[in-house]
Image (cartoon, rainbow, N blue to C red):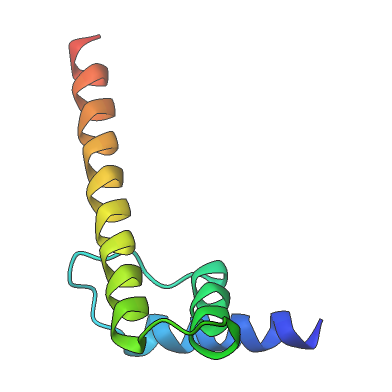
Length: 79
C-alpha cells in the first residue's frame, strides 16, 4: 500500500513538472517499470537505454492515441 502511494505521488509530481511534448504523461505503471528497470533488474541495462525506451514507448502510445481519435472522429462525421 505504501509503495502504491509512493508511485501515485511520484506520478502526480511528474504531471506537474514534465513538459507535454507529444508524450503521454507518466503513469503509475510506467514509474513502477522504470524503478524496477533502473534499480532492481540484473544484469542492469544502461540508464540511458531504459529512459530512451520509456520515452519511445510513451511517444508511440501518444501517436497511436491521436490516430485512434482521428479515425473515430472521421467515422462519426461520415454517419
